[in-house]
Image: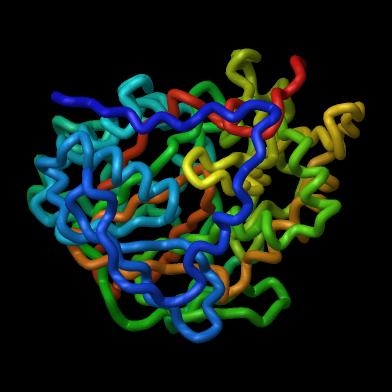
Length: 424
C-alpha cells in the first residue's frame, strides 16, 4: 500500500502566522477544482443570510476505496484549509478502506485509534465511554460503530445490534425534560475536540461516514442558558464551530495572553470528570466539586500528562485557533510574554470563569454549522481547529448509523504552538 504523509510543519517560537488567511470565503462561492495533481472538485457550503461561518466545503469526484497518494495529500490539505469537509458519494466505502485512509493521512502515527483499542477506551474513557455503546467493526476494529437504535440484522458482521445508550442530553446538570425532548427540542450534547489529552496526541482529523440517519422532523436546538438562543436542524447531524473564529473574536489583550500561555490537563482526564455534568449549552462543565481527587484517580503515568499551548497554529494556512478543552483543564499558566513568570490558576471554578466568556462568544447560531449529510457521505474535520458536538433526537425518528475513525497525531499540539512550553 502506498502511503503519503501530509505532515504538519513544525512551528518554532519565531513563527509568524499569515493572519490574512482567516477571511478566505465569507460568502457563497463557486465550485473549483483543486490543484492539477488532484482529481476532485470542491464546492463551498451554502450559507444562509446572517451566517458568519467561514469554513466548510463539499468534495465530489473521489472514490475513497481507490484514492491515489496525490489525492490523499490534496484531501489532507483541504481538511486543514477548510476545517470541515463532506466527501460525497461513498456508499460503497468498506470499513477497512476508511481505516486505511486514516492511516495514510498520518503514516508515522501508531496504527491504532486515538483513544486506543476498545479495552483501553472502556478503562480510560470515563465520561466518554460510560454513557454510550461503542463497537468496533469486525476486521476493522479501529473503525467504531456509533449511532442510535437498531443497526440491522447483519451490519458488517455485527448481528441484530440495538444501540440504546448513546450521546444524550443526560450529560447536562440541568436536564431537558422528557416532554420537551419528545416535542422535538434538543441541545448541543458536549462541545469538544477528539483528543485523549493523556498519552496519545489528538487526532489531526476525524472521519465519520453516514450509513443511515433520519432526516425529519426538524429539531429545535435550544441553548437553555438564559440567552434565549435556538436554531433548527435535521436530526442526526453533527454541529461545528471554528476556534479560529473564536480567536478572532478575542480582544487584543486576550490574544496576547493566549499566544503565550498554556494548559495542563488532568491525568486520565475523562475519568477525572466522570462524575461531573455539563452546562445546558454543551460548552463546559458546571462547577459542582465532583472532580475526582488525584488520590481517587489511582495510578497514572506522569509522563503521559499533557501540557499544550492555548493557541494552535494551522500548518497549512498559518491561522491561529484558541484550542482549549476546558472540561479537562486542571491548570492554566497565564502570561503575556515569554519573559514573564506565568500566573498559575489551579482552581477549576477560576479556570472555567476565565474560559467561559472567550469561548461563548463564538457559541452563537451565526457561527455554528450543521453540515447536511446524505447516506453514503463521509465528513472529515480538523480537530486542531474545530469543536464539534452531537445533537440527540427521539428514537421514534429512526435509527442512526455512523462509522467513526481517527488516529492520534504523530506530531502534537506542543509542536504546533507559538513557543516551546517550559519544562515542568
